[in-house]
Length: 437
Image (cartoon, rainbow, N blue to C red; front, side, top):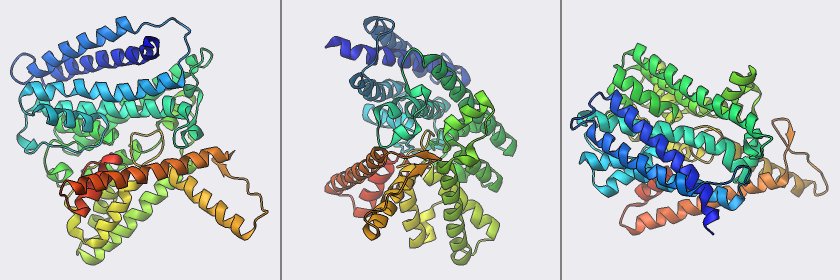
């Protein structure tokens, strides 16, 4: 029985050591290593590093041992449960947050949700602000790795559609898998650096640029101010944020493929093209609505619409202003956009664009067979045959998602919250958007 847990212990051990290293790096960045600013990170790094060494000793496995499906499920669940607990240590040790709030903030960061219990971010210690951003940056690359390697192997929610060599854990495929993981990491770092540099050129100071670059590419949405992106009052910064949020919602395997093979396949990918078209149409609709109802210029309206639409669809959760003041039409639109999400294999949360595409194909096929019972329709996605079990998996995932949404909404309503608050809070938590209505 103990052997079942060994791979999970091994992975958790490596993740905790990596987190301890990032705590030390964060301490160096805020350049207050031994005073009240950096001490929480130093103590947390010692505790986390020590805890990471224990499972590495106990979780040793023989080379060549194949990992079973049950063990992969355990690896996924254990990693996303244990790591946020240690990520909460800097918050708790700083004395700024209690234990429950620290865990909440850490889980929100690691899962790139962006919900927060903190108020007064503008006067918060730099060490707290920076660690929040680092958590989201780490969570973003963790989500990419899981989407590329784990979920396709487990055939979860239609993810087998995006299976690559990295999803095959055999010895034969590992050299190719390592190249893919390396390219994914390089792409993630390069986008983060480019985003931070663009923010700095646009007028942010270096601290704000680093923090917002980390939470933009990870589509997490933590900011250094309660006003979020509204603190800068700059259309240029909003457009930079829009572009890089959208980039974070694109499958990172496409970036990896470009870096490793020089192949540009973004414009040939059905999911990406559907994603771009959806963002464009939604932005134009809301932008036009703002021009008519809010007395904005077209440039200002389309900028604010594109920024907020991209923020919600990619589940980043940034805000330039309170869009609930735009009227009931805008509120209804954003509530729907909360469900959508970005592309599979990106840092974005939500249901993902491809599941909507597969469900539409399923509906189209069903209606066609009602009219022509004996017709045989060959379903394809990205030019490849689409097995029925992948479509069924996507439909099953969608049903499970809405069942969970209903259950969470009812549970929150039972605690005394009104319907709008209950529904939006449940939706933004499940889709990893963060801010609710």
